[in-house]
Length: 250
Ligand code: 9D3
Image (cartoon, rainbow, N blue to C red; front, side, top):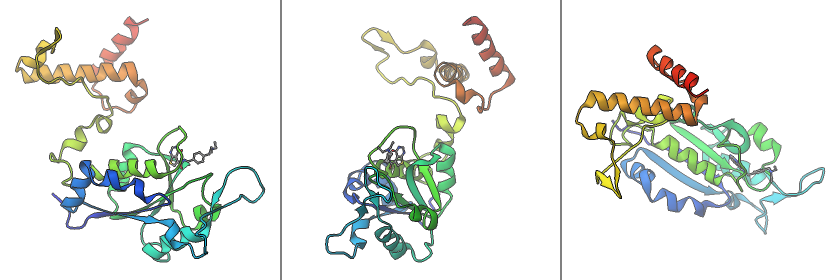
């Protein structure tokens, strides 16, 4: 079911043009047409009041780089969302809490959020202290600004909204929701360059197929992401199987 009200995202950025290409394709475009999500992108520079539309300045105390000035950010966010803002204001920053599927699910329950994209060395600390209500990082690598991170959050949250994916159970089947990596996928042709699709998948025996997929999932997770196994929902038999792999490999 689709909710009668779209989840609303207000995105505040110095580079509004980077959002448009992604908003008009993919699941996001469909979600917007369906009325599941509404996205408005705001250029922080539009809220400057000086002749040269300055949005950054040198850091107090010296050192390199530039810092985003507080006035245009407060004016933009409060101009759109009121004072105080009537939605959570999430700053995308390398210092934020790590973004995970659990955080995406948490945000998907909210009716309205604002995403604030930093640039340069970051935003004036008073923005963080008196305007921002949450801070998110998408991982331990260096980006040029918060825009790509905002798109990641927007995409991950939107696909969780009711009615956005065809199958309402589909998000629950996602590997990160189940806590395991996915099994291998195959499609036609049955033989490509001599490489065959595993016989079990063509057997039509749905019980056997389900067991094979589950074991492949476990095996892949054990090989590539053993850190996920601690949290995963496994039967005692599955734990025992992994324990056998563990002893054989040594
Ligand atoms: C070169 C400047 N860095 C000193 C080590 C600090 C820094 C400031 C600003 C590094 C990156 C950025 C811009 N990044 C983001 O705004 C950002 C980000 C990221 O870089 N990685 C992961 N998640 C995010 S969310 C926002």
